[in-house]
Amino acid sequence: MRDNQSQVIKGRGATANLSGRFESVRREAFDDGWVIAEDDEAPPSPRTAIHIEEARSILSHNDSPDVRFTRSINPYRGCEHGCIYCYARPTHAYVNLSPGLDFETQLFAKRNAAALLRAELARPGYRVTTINLGAATDPYQPIEKTERITRSVLEVLAECQHPLTLVTKGALITRDLDLLGAMARDRLVHVFISISQLERRLTRILEPRAASPERRLDAVRALAEAGVPVSVLVAPIIPFLNDAFLEAVLERAARAGAVGAGYTILRLPWEVRPLWLAWLEEHFPDRAAHVMARIRELRGGAENVSTFGERMKGQGPWADLIRQRFRLACTRYGLATGEALAARYPLDPTQFDPGRLAGQAALF
Image (cartoon, rainbow, N blue to C red; front, side, top):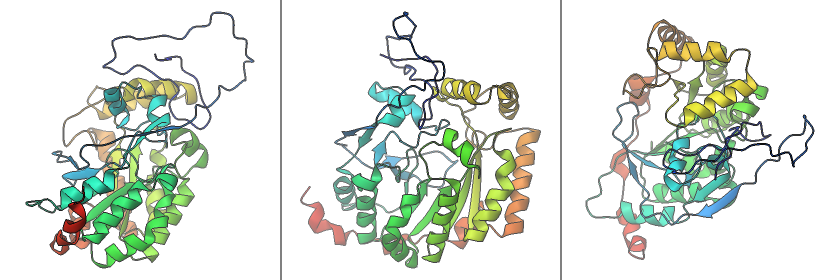
C-alpha cells in the first residue's frame, strides 16, 4: 500500500511514498473527514527500520564507461541520508518497496558482507581490480555507526591489501582513519567526498540526514592530514538551486587538502523523476518551472537521458558553461581531474595477497 499524497516531513527527503513500477496495485490517500489537523501541523517522521539481508553475493559488476570501476560493494540497501535526487531510489522497487519514503526508512543491512567478501577474494582464479564502496547507497550513512558493516569490509580489504575507492557524504568516515591511512601508505585507497553546495538550509531539505557541508569539509581535512588521497565530487549540479556554489566548493575543498575533483549533472531516472517533481513543487514552487526548463535543455528536450557519455554531464550551451567553469576552477585551485587524477594517484593492485584470506575463507 502506498501513500502518494505529497507532504513535507521533517528530517526526510521524499515528500511521498509512491508505488514502485513493479507493483500491480496502487493506492491514493484521501481525506475522509475523520482526521482533523491544524494547517501548520507537521506530519510525524516515520522511524527508520533496519532489516537483516542475508546476501548471496557481495560484489556487483559494472560495465558503464561513465565510471572508473568495474566492481563495487554496497553494504546497505536503501539510504537514510534521504537525498531526494538519489539515482539508487528505484532499486527499492525490486523488493516491493517504495522508492520514496521507504527507500530512506526501510533499510537492509548485509551483515554477512565481510564473510562473503572474504570467500570471494580467496577464490582460485579471482583477478584483482579496484573495488568501489558507495556506488549506489552510502557506506557511511547513519546506521553504519552501530552496524559497522563498512568497517568490517574495509578490514578484509586491508588484510589482503586490495585496492579500493570510496564515495561518501558521511563524516563518519573519519572513524576509520586507522585503516584508510595505512592503506593509503601502500597506495591502496582513494576517497571521494560528495559536496553539492555549502548552504546548511539547502542541505537540510536536499540531503536531510547527510553530514553538513562543513563537516564534510572537516572530513576532507582529516583524511588529507592522515595521508589519504581525497577528492571532492560536486554532485549533482542542479540548475538554479546549487550551480552557483561550484567554484566555492572547489576552493574550500582544495584549501582543506583535496587533490582532485569531479562533477555530475542531476539525473532523473525512473521513479526519481516524480519524487523530484513533488519535492521541487513543495520547496521551490517559485522556480520549479525554470529548473525543469533548464534540465530539459540539458537533456536535449527530455527530462532524463540514459545514454552513456551524456547522462552524467548533459549537453548544450549550459552544459558547456558548467564544464568550462569546472575546468577553470580546478586549474585555479590545483585540483586534478579525470585521467590526470588517476595517473597522479594510481592504486597498486600488485600487492593483493589472497593467501592471507585462504585459511579463514575456508570456514564459510
